[in-house]
Every structure is written in structure tokens, then in C-alpha cells.
Length: 85
Length: 223
Image (cartoon, rainbow over all chains, first blue to last red; front, side, top):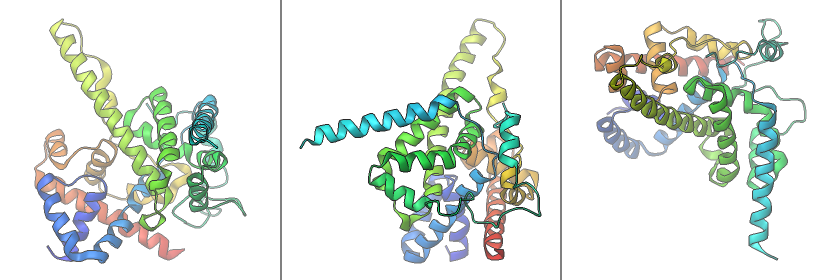
């Protein structure tokens, strides 16, 4: 696989669309191309952001954040209690 | 179900950013108030177990994350539950985030998408079982099928640049990407679902993703 082919596969890889046989080949090429490959894969994850940012934000229920923050604080407190003095 | 059915919200979100003239420069993320902490700074705060950092990250991205989840599962109440789980996961897994491997938003979207697709698959499995039961009992099939796919990628007013790039693709490429990204389908599943040869699906995905990737690069270079 040349690097251009690897780039095509990488874009499929980050959205989880590679078939199992392609994945094996992709992982081998990824190893072969080393840092260059890792850098390109990292860049490809921008596709995730792009898809998310193309959507119009949706409204969540008002109580959701309160519930979330309350869970977070409880969890933090229980962790600090279990850690002890 | 639409991912943003609330007209008040749509009006609020689009205010000030929907026209060509007053659109802020493309940054690949949301617009920040002057002096506001960056996403990376908020992630550091969360890693230091500061609830306020999570609170700010939530305020910044809950709308986008909810839209993403809704795009996959098409149910508002379930989307809220998943959204809460995703932000709890962000809190719990923050230590695994590395800025070297990408931006916080990319990481968050990956978490949200994975959870949403898992949720969708569970729901589909449940619904398939339910549908089988309905057929067996000679009842009408349920209406769940309409929630499984949504073929058109809508342009979000506040995210016009991104949407434009995606919408510029031929419909067949958009469909393939929609099914892969938002429904978590493999190439073979897309081929089966759309009655398209596997090679064609692969070509559509490759071409479509390359165009989006190149479009994003161009936008970044432009600004």
C-alpha cells in the first residue's frame, strides 16, 4: 500500500468503516509508515469534528445539567472520602 | 424526528452567525468569548477534577453533542440520557485524553458517537425482536423503521461552513457517509442496505471523505 492509499484508508478508519480484512492491511501499513501515519490519522479525526459541527445544536432538558453536575460532585466527594485523610 | 425541532432554540443559535457578512472566522470549533478558557484548558481542569470545568465544557458543547446523538438515535428522551452518560464518561475518562492525539472536541465526538451507535444497535436489536413478535402475532409492523435512517444531512445555521462542505457532495456519497458515520454501518452493511455493489460503496466513501477532508483543509488555510 502506498501512502496515498493509506490516506484513503485512514479516512475510512477514523469513522469505523474499514472491513476486517482491510483493517489488518491498514494496521500493517500504519506500522510501516510510522509517525507520518500517526500524524495523518490524528488529522483525520477532524472529520469527526466536522460532522458534529455541521449539525444544528439541539436543546437538552433543563434538569439534565443539574443532574449531571450533582452526579459529578457526588462522585468527586465519594472518591475523596475513599481516598481518606 | 428532527434533531433540532425547537424553533426558539434554532433562532437563538443562529442569531448573529447565520449570514455570510457577520460569520466569524472558521476555527474548527465553537466561537469563544474573549478571555474564555480554551477547550484544552477545560480538559486540564477536568483532569484536575474541577466540576466547574466540566460545567463550562457542557455549556459549550451540549447542543452539538445532543444533535449528534439525536442524529443517530432519533429519540429526544434517549438522547438526553445518552448525553448525560457521555458527559459522565468525559469526567471519568478525562485522564485518558491526550492533547497530542487531537482536540478535545474530536475526542468527545468519538465518545458520543460510540455510545449513540451502541444505543442504536441495542434499540434495533430490541425492535427487530419486537417486530418479529408482531409478525408472529399477525399485528401491523411497528413504525420504528422510519427512525433507522435519515438520508439528508441538514445544514445547521450556526455551522454553515461545515454543512456547506458536506452538502456539496453528490447525494450518493452523502448517503454512504451518513450510514457509515451516523449509523455505524460497515461497507458491507451499506452495500446491502442500499443495494449497491461493495466496490461502489467503498469508492463513494473514499471520494466523499476526501472531499470533506480537503474542504476542511481549504477552510482552515483560508482563515
